[in-house]
Image (cartoon, rainbow, N blue to C red; front, side, top):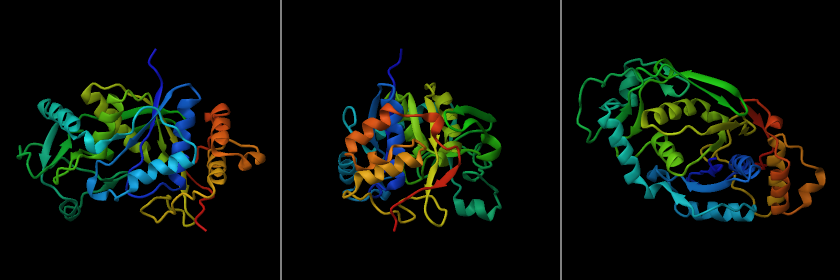
Length: 302
């Protein structure tokens, strides 16, 4: 039997916020409730967006909130050779090609948008451009419908060729795309349980297609309701979310559990972070997680 392994994979573009806490808590409970391993991965593949000191701050945040990860912390910035290896495999299989199109040129051409942005129409598939100084796209012309069963949202499907088009695996500036990095990392780290926000449901279909092309295993997926700010926008570093408050870890953990529908007893809010985490693991219930695509929870923004 394959050991159960989950992961929490924040990006060091700033400190963790309440939305990060909800995602980390859900991933932790999902795997620890099954006596599995919980790995910590710093997703710093997009090096221009990395904020100095953010990785260390993330580690401090997790420690203050009582989390303990298994094994050593992994960093995407140390795995570029692995990403290139699997990109070369796709290129050798003729599943990828170089592309000279920019978002601006596609807008000028009137290319329509889908759930993940511009639907790339395959303009460069047959051009046989040089790989240097061009982006590398995965050909989805034969992808059609990609389907999976999410542990919270149930059956989900997306027609990649019609709704997404060929997506980028490596940018023209030589930055490896999130899609390639996360799929390779999950395979090499033997991840069996992926828990993340509901805004990544569509992306999961891209990842499953890429897994199929690379001959990788497909882990189980569970997406959780997002945390929105008062304006109804997803709480994130880009929308100015406040960093986690180290003075009140228990209160924030309690609120995160409530957001996940776990119904902690009121007196638990006064317990220490590790006691709260142990209760969360012991009482973890997937069926209690609300299935709304997004939900407003207490975000400590005021």
